[in-house]
Length: 235
Length: 235
DNA sequence: TTTATAAGTGTAGGATATACACTTAGTTTG
DNA sequence: CAAACTAAGTGTATATCCTACACTTATAAA
Image (cartoon, rainbow over all chains, first blue to last red; front, side):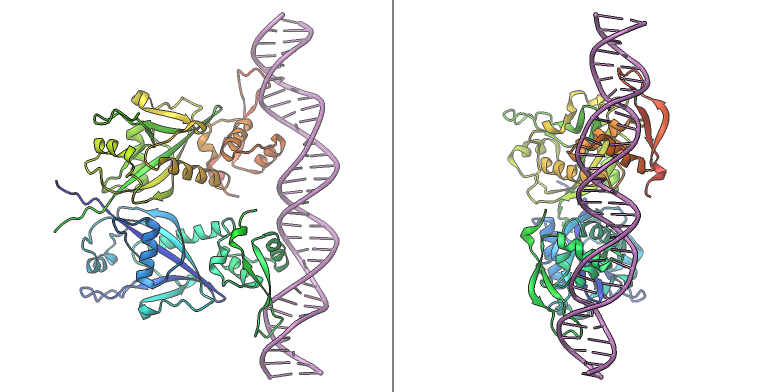
């Protein structure tokens, strides 16, 4: 029987990292290919073809680990991108020829966004040295393929889910201050909040619980620490 | 070169139809297969494999038309389902063997939900007689594959988007009464609204515009008719 | 001890959400 | 043609929520 190879399926991960310096996204620097020294190497989102026997989220976890050594990241599917020409741009073809056995094949990709706290133990994707980097969201330039569009879709999803889905704690350290929480909301939702009103609202969320512990080593009044209670979600 | 046929991609459409008798979903009755007369034929969502050179939404439109003769339906992608075993259930295999050239192949499907008004010109998918039917949402039984799960995902998407995305008019006739609009909200969001408060809120939406026209032929005070202004959306 | 820094706190006014019942316009029936 | 039936249409008072706004406090550094 003639097997027609209809199309390929991949996952792409838009991993957001947050710390007090802002919101970042995890990008991979393409290695320069032998055949094309003219164009400077581009950045892209971590992503790859899925295997025949793995689920989509499983594929996203595997690909993210293989490319960045990150593990245990909160991941959520947000959109699937299937324009027939999404990988056909000239700038992308030579890179594809260097890594794919069937570089001309159409690829549909399932987008996942991921959330990581960059506060604690600095999860720098170390093993790949310069090839992986956290890039400030403001400073993201043109990416390979349709990855700017995918990034923008992920940002929309993050914005619309931050409040309703109680996912903010994925971007914060286990113990955090209310100023950190407010800063996160301000960066993600791109608007300022009034400190007192913000704190009034947080008091109503009974999954944000105050700890008997204070910030240390800051040259101002130390803030009380809080943590999230995953069980207490809803209500 | 050995072409490995990695997997197939399909679209499935969850088309919601609304009229004064409630919210329905469009289902297809599988034809009984020659090899298996024991199990009664099941219902399923309209869906099929996508073609090599078409976009995802384009595929959803084509498949929906081919299977139900419906055209020009509002369609929106909501989720992609990729469990490796999602088409491997025993009940589904004989049907797949009767319609697919590679029935054992893994299939990932992109889910679209669609919205149709069942008020005007009764868009009964006539050409396929008994094989296509509008089923009351309450009365949907077990469907083929993971289609109950897909339906439930579509319902979640519809609920969460009805208010924020101004899509209710896709489910209503061009000219509608405020009671119809309220009935729609009540059925989709599964809760009751106060008539006066509901109308106060509608007055604030400046994309709902009153017409100089009344209901006719009803045995009570005729209601004023309204229509949606697609341009006026936002604000 | 002074200074610098961000943490932490309350209130008043405006806007919004909720709860609630009677009158009206048209159709049907006797 | 009068009475009965039905769903449409309408306003207000109360409670709740949102918004705007400025000073005091705890710690580290100088």
